[in-house]
Length: 563
Ligand code: HC1
Ligand code: SF4
Image (cartoon, rainbow, N blue to C red):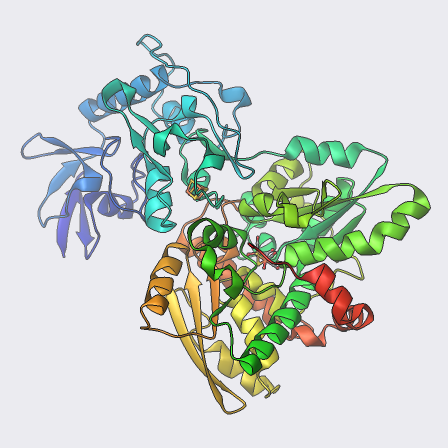
């Protein structure tokens, strides 16, 4: 606690972790590459250097502790010269194919080079040529564009607990890569895409499939049918000037129709099928004594994690397909006749907040006769680019509701997109008390919130149930270790890989915790205003499940991972 002098201004501080945060608090946008407020401090890029007025010493503000009376300058001629030099050196070893780069317009190197007026590079081109890695269905690596800020290394290790990427070699040979320079498909990468979300340049990007989407839309033989995931609606608007959490579902439906999509549906419909199937499976396990914990199955990066790291727990995973894949299976089944009748092909596109959904769609379990049930997964950001490309002014559009019959979902479905939502939906089904009071009581438990591992105890028909919500994949490891050591016991565990749940998916507009929280709040609001709050109240879903009957339901809606 104290007062610092920043560029002649007195700036009080209280608990800020470094001088950089105090400077930003003073309203000065310090440039950085390797600083990411939610990760450890790396202090390598040196863009955030400041000059100590008393000593004349120059230091990186991200690595300095705030001190009472410290007087610094952030924009002296010396500092600007240093910053330009850093940028020039980076550009000399960078593949500057900006006009065609997927990151163009969102690249920090490009933005800072412009901001600091770097219009020519005085150093010779020192670039090595590295091989690109296109082996992951979720992300694309181009090491020629890496500036070694290490944000991806830290996000993968610290936030996701995976440690797939690391520094290798030394000096001018220094590179970021998977261990032993393996291709991503040879590693235990779960495809969460968080490395791409924080990458400051175009070195790691989400696999771009916009070309395929347009091709499908422009093929007259196709009937393009879309499902939209819960979390997309509360984030996409951010790219069009709306606040995080603003629900743009009805504008999105209109935009997709303008782009040539014939039918626009809501993944919420399938989330209701998942809730009912998963709750029934849970109740059956309670009756039969396990296996416990029952893990939720809708997050594909989590499923992949278990497969690669702890396959013995695969039988603990719910046998329910994710809502995206349930939707796809039902659609494929229902549209078979329609396709035969009009000689067209139903092409199924899913708009997801998640890069791992691209990986899930490519899994053999969800492929029939060589064709995936979901033909294409497009992330929220890819859709933003498509809307822009089509010249559509999203905020100006007339609202339009999703189509029927698969456009209807409950409040329990829309909260799937926020941490704790899947468990809350299942709890709403399992609790015998169906009153509004019971719903209110659930809301104030730790099913909601942003804790990393949240425990909830409930009594259902005299039986005490222990639930846990895991918010972020790195914490799943901790929970499993505790379960194995006999320190904890749970009946049901929800795991979502990305912080905040799907609202924080790597396919979403880039946002820190505050934005993710507002998106989550947007989903809870959508739940509050939903016509019905429980999956089993969805009349179209209950009818469909009844028509299918248990055997067909099993065939279409369930899957077994592993042996
Ligand atoms: Fe999700 Fe799900 S909530 S996994 O986060 O269960 O991606 O939004 O679509 O499938 O419904 C993602 C979101 C999404 C599925 C649902
Ligand atoms: Fe790590 Fe996720 Fe990136 Fe894979 S996609 S390298 S697991 S951060």
